[in-house]
Structures are given as C-alpha cells and as structure tokens.
Amino acid sequence: MVEQLRLSDLAREHGTPLFVYSKASMLAALAAYQAGFAGRKSQICYAMKANSSLAVLQVFARAGCGFDIVSIGELARVQAAGGDVAKVIFSGVGKTRAEMRSALHAGIGCFNVESEAEIDVLNEVALQEGLRAPISIRVNPNVDPKTHPYISTGLKGNKFGIAHERTLATYQRAAQLPGLKVVGIDCHIGSQITEEAPYLDALDRMLDLVEAIAASGIALEHIDFGGGLGIQYQAEEPPRADALWAKLLQKIDARGLQNHTLMIEPGRSLVGNAGVCLTEVLFMKPGEQKNFCIVDAAMNDLPRPAMYQAFHGIVPLVQTAAGAPALLCDVVGPVCESGDWIGKDRNLAARAGDVLAVMSAGAYCMSMSSNYNSRPRPAELLVDGASATLIRPREQISDLFRDETLAA
Image (tube, rainbow, N blue to C red; front, side):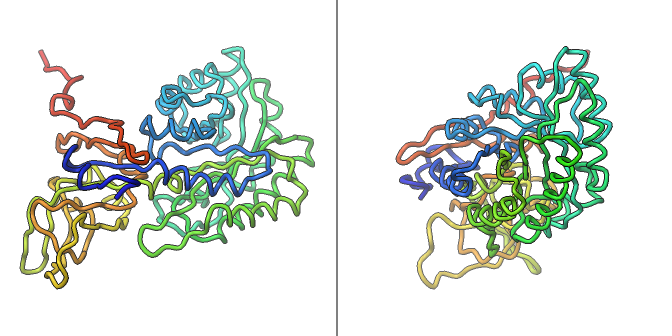
C-alpha cells in the first residue's frame, strides 16, 4: 500500500517502471524539521536536486519551504511550481555569469559562494546589472562525514567551499566589495550522514568562525547548516531531525547566537523514503555461478546502485505462499552494461510477471535518470490519501529524438 491505495493496482493502471510518491510521508518528514525549529527564526530550504519533479516542489512550497538550487534550470522549476523566489538559496561551485544575472534579476534570497574567484565574478556581474548580490560564504570545515566518498563535501580534498583557515580573510574582503551584501555563513559536509558527531564537530568549527567574523565588525543575519541527514535504506539508524537539532541548538544557545536566523537544506531526508519504484519481473535466469532476476527498470531509472553501490530494499508486491522456494539472485535491468544492477544477492521468490517495489526511491533516482540505451523515462505518481495524480506521464519513443535533426 501507499497511503490508501494498492501499489499493484497502480502498476496495473499505469505500467512499469513507475515511481510512486506519498505526499503524507513527505510532510511527515518535513514536520520533524519544523518541530526541531519550533519557536526559532528559521527557514527550511528543500534541496531540490534530490527530486525536482514539479508536483514534489509544489508540496514543499505550499508547506512554506524555500529551495536550495544548484542551476538556473532548478530556479525555473521553483518558479513553475509556485515557490517563493525570495526564499531561494543558490549553491554550487560553478555558477556561470548568465546564471548569476538571471538569479539576481529574479530576486533570490542568497548566493552560497564557494570560492574567492566566484566572489570576484559575482561582484562584477552585480555591478554591471546595477544590483547587490546577497551572499553567504560556504565554509569547508574539513570534517569527515563518514559517508560514501562521492557524496562527501566537507573535507579538504573536496571541491566545495572555502577552506576554514581562509574564511575570515575572505569575509573581510567580500564585505568591502560594492556589488555584494554579506548576509550569512553556510556549511555542508556531505550526504546520507547517519551519525551525529560529524554535525556537532562541524557546528563547533562554524560557530568559532561566526564569533570571529562578528568580532571583525561584520554582522551576519543567518547561519545555514546545509543538509545531508541520512535515511534508512537498510539497517542505518540516522538521528531524527528534531532530536539532532535539539543538540545543535544547545550549542548555538551556549554561544549566545540564538538571534541569528537558522537555515537548513534537507533533500534526501524529506523525499527518500516517500517513494518507491515499481518494476516488473521479465525473466528469471538461473546460472552456474549466479542467478539473475531481470526486471524492466534499469540503471538509467535507478542510478544509485551503479553509481554508489547503494542498497535499496526490494519487495515483491504479492508474497508467495509459505514455504515457496526463494532464489538467491542479482536483480538486474535490460541496459547493456554489467553495472546495470538494482540489488545483489537477494533472496526472492519471484516469477515472470510479478511486480517488485524498489524501496527508498524518492531521492536521487528520477532526478538522476537518463535516456541511456534510448530508454524512455518512467511515469511518476503522487498519492494523497485515496487519490493518485499522474505528475509526469511516461515518455514515449518519439520524445527521445523530438529535438534532434538529421544532417544535410
């Protein structure tokens, strides 16, 4: 079931592969952050790279969220979904001049700048446009988030942010540039973090900087602590958002910094466990060394296993009778790559025609999907109680080359 609807009915009506999201699950995850910030000056900005489907953005916009974007295309999606542009934070290490101009004229809330070179370019662009760019500087605190190296962002070897040791001098320089208005400080150490310690360590280093920046005569309006809180894919036990923020707020209060507006940029933790991907078993293929369950979803639909060796639970929608034999197998897709797998060494009692639910598929699946092997992308449904809305129709073959032309 997803809320009040049977997943098997949705698969029958809309076909597979099919992404299905629960609105109630998204709002419940958001409520934990809202509870953690109760009574505080705060702004929750959904990190939309996790899932940028318009209807998902609409859910969070209507709930009062701002948005963390990393491209001008994402800003256009926020606008199309009815989001408040003044609550948009523009992150990312490689903003172009054109993106800076567009975001400035749209009136976004803040640029999270990530290098001294970017500060110079943004100042130049703002002066050319006759505007001032509100900025926060993203600090790289050199804290190990203890997550997959591809999604670690706060170590010295990562491309993100300005080194902790350079931050104060960078603020002092930025504060002198006429095209910029310093409004905050930002930190983001990684994604799928399941321990409290990295957050607490990073916050201590960040608050040291807030105090030093204030002592130099620069007033900051907000402290942005990024996102990255993990979800349960398998046996992880990440802290609840409200419990984590209770500990972080204790540190902030102990420093006397509670008058700053607090900002957070959750993504995966709001949508990851709100979605499943339904996929049909095409063939069961036993072998001498390996057994395979071949399904119609592939690495272009669910890139996380191929990219991060990530685990997703895989559950048959219809359970077999007690005692039915299960086969230890790899669940793989039709794409012509050995890396095209959804799950390895799973005990499944399944047969051709069965539908499987790939769990925790609400984040970094559809937003990272592609048309590799000229495969149309799946449809998406948003479930609200007893109703399901088709929020993205299944791509058709003709869509794949709609914008292409033959050479003369």
